[in-house]
Length: 84
Image 1 (cartoon, one colour):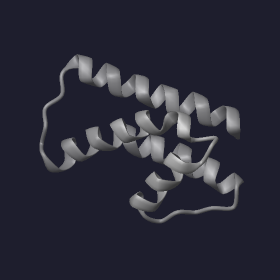
Image 2 (tube, rainbow, N blue to C red; image 1 turned 120 degrees about the vertical axis):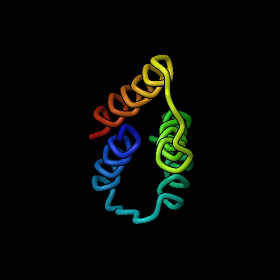
Image 3 (tube, rainbow, N blue to C red; image 1 turned 180 degrees about the vertical axis):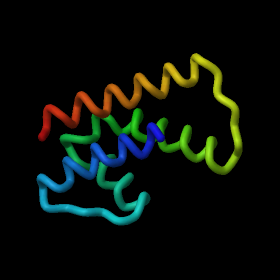
Image 4 (spheres, rainbow, N blue to C red; image 1 turned 90 degrees about the horizontal axis):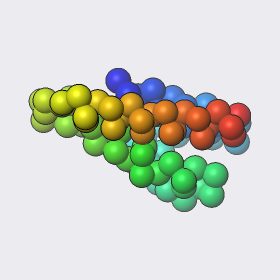
């Protein structure tokens, strides 16, 4: 859930620059290359992998994992809100 929240923040930014990227791969590449988003690339990728591991690997997360992921989302959210 946290990854998809981050993805929607990224999409909100993309809408302001006339972009709508339909694939995760294309969006990931854009986040990594865009000068205004590059700063949050690491947190965005961490959230993506948490989400993947939860959905497909059935990984169990502890409180520290949840705190780390929540902090990543907070970083993504606060950065993008400044750009909107």
